[in-house]
Amino acid sequence: MNPQFPFQPIAEYRAHESEILAAMKRVGDSGHYILGPEVTAFEKEFAAAIGATHAVGVANGTDALVLALRALGIGAGDTVITVSHTAVATVMAIELAGAEPLLVDIEPKSFTLDVNKLAGTLKQNRSRKIKAVIPVHLYGHPADMTAILEIARANNLRVIEDCAQAHGAKIGGKTVGTFGDLAAFSFYPTKNLGAIGDGGAVLTNDAALAQRVRELRQYGWRSRYISDTTGMNSRLDELQAAILRVKLPHLRRDNARRRELAQIYFDAIGAPNFSSARSSAELQRADLKIGVPSVGAGCEHVFHQYVVRSPPRDALAEFLKSHGVPTAVHYPQPVHTQPAYLNRVVTGAGGLAESERACREVLSLPMHGYLTNEAVQFAAKEISEFRA
Ligand SMILES: *Cc1c(COP(=O)(O)O)cnc(C)c1O
Image (cartoon, rainbow, N blue to C red):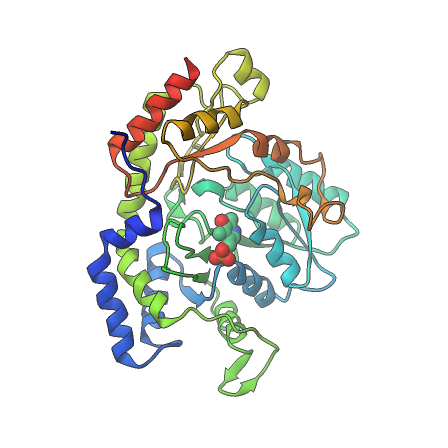
C-alpha cells in the first residue's frame, strides 16, 4: 500500500486535538471573545519566540502587511517595492494601504528578492516616492537581509519583512522578523504556525510603531469609542489566539522535523542543487530534470515548502499524481502577469525573467512536520523513477 500524505491542517489538529479542545473550552467558559487574555498572552509568547519586543495580533497576514505600512504612514502617492514571485497578498496589501507596488525580480537560487536588481530599480526610479521595501522570505528561506538593510539605509527606505512563510527561519542565528522596521506574519492553517482559521501578527522592536498598529487594528481608537485616526477592524480573536498558544511550543520541533524530511529528499534526489545548475538549459543538458533547493550560507531554512525546479515540471507533477504523490505549484503565475495586475503594475530594472521562469519550473513536494519518513522516502523514490 502507498503511504498516506495527510493534509497539514488536519494532521496538526489530530496531533494536538485534546489540548486544542481544552483551549477552545477555556475561551468559551471565559466569556471573553475579543482582545482578551489569550491574545495578550499569545502576543507576549510569540514576540519572545521570534526575539522581538512587541507583537500585535491581527486578523490575517494580509492585514498585518497593510497595518505595518499604515503604521509607517505609507499610503497614497507612495511607492513600495516587493517581488512578483510571491503570494498575491504581498502585492495586494500595498494597494490596500493606498500605495503603488513596484515589482522587482528574484534571485534564482533562493527565490527571494534580487538585491542587485533592487539597487538598479532604485537608480531608475528616482522620481518616485519609494518609501519601503517588503522582502518575502519565500518557502521558508530568508531573503538576503544584510544586503537589503544596507541598500535600505542608503536610500532612506523602511523595511517590512513578509514572514508569512518563514516562522522561525534564521540568518546567522537571528530570526527573521527581527531585521526590518516591522514584520508581518500569517497564521493561515497551512503556514508553519497555523490557526484553525485566519490569524496574523505584526512584530516590531519599536514601541511607538507597535502602539500605532494596536490603534489601527481597532477603529483607530486610542481610548474606547474615540478614534484618533481612521483605522480598521483587524483583530486576532481569542479562540485563534488560544489555539496558537497550544501550537507555538511545537514550532521549533515542527521546523526541525521539516528539515529532517528535507534531508531525506536531498539525500534521495541528490546533487545538483541550484548553485551547480542555475539555468533550465543546464538542468536539461545534464538530463537531470530536477534541481533541489539551495540553502544560503548561514541560513536556517524552515521549509514551509520543499520546492524543486524541474523544466518538465507538468510532466513530473502528472507522474507523481498518478503514483499517489500529491504536489502543488507555488505559484503558477507571477503577480505581474495575473489579470488583475497585467499591464498595470510597475516592474523594476532588468525585467522579471527569473520570476516568470520560476513559475514555469517550480514544484512543491509533500512537506510538513507530521509526514512520516516513509511517505517522503516514497515520494523521493517516485522522483528517481521519473528521472530514470
Ligand atoms: C499567506 C501569505 C500571505 C497572506 O496571509 P493571509 O493570512 O492569507 O492574509 C502574505 N504573504 C505571503 C508570502 C504568504 O504566503
